[in-house]
Image (cartoon, rainbow, N blue to C red; front, side):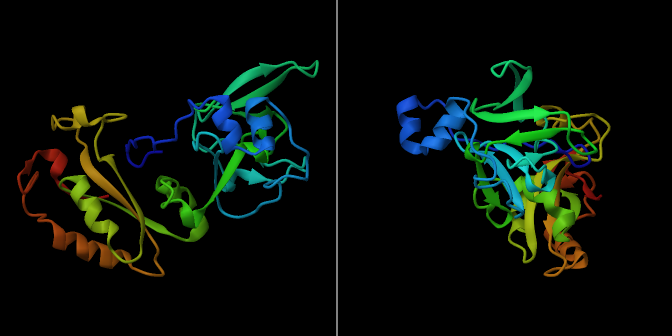
Length: 260
């Protein structure tokens, strides 16, 4: 996910190097059968086929993000169905001929868990139907995303929840981000680089000061709790916009003051 050239670090996931005995202790028999033995649960008799709550679905084994409720739909199959994965490359595809026909099996990228299959009979715009076992998934509600380390996905629910966002630059993004996180009405923040001309900027490039990018913070906020004007007023209180390409001891165009 990017904003104006933002590059985000991947969130950490739990180790998937567990042996089978440990997994059998941690998972239910159905979870183990589906994820480790490529099993298929019964349709219409599983946890998430008809769940309509807002949130994301992660691998029950490795905790890596896989799907979003925003892309979930009722396919009539009796299994959770999605039009796309939550991030590009979140799953791997494998040829499956066990039923005597060619199908495309899906596995989680890091955990290697069997998830289900993808078919080309889904709705627009993707035309895909990711047909997934509930037993391979764990649902994380929107109100628990931040606490469970999936805060960056809150930005995906901006329109659905009526939230708004604001992108700013005013010195070291870690410091700016820390101050905004504590403000009333701020739902989540994320740091990155914006305003420049180079694609996929990295710190090693931006620190040279010749990419045009500034260290930036995107702020997701609830307009029912705080206003954009209040956040901008706070922004001007915590930095000096009159010092060109500098904030304190941090010098360079990457530390300039910008409102995007």
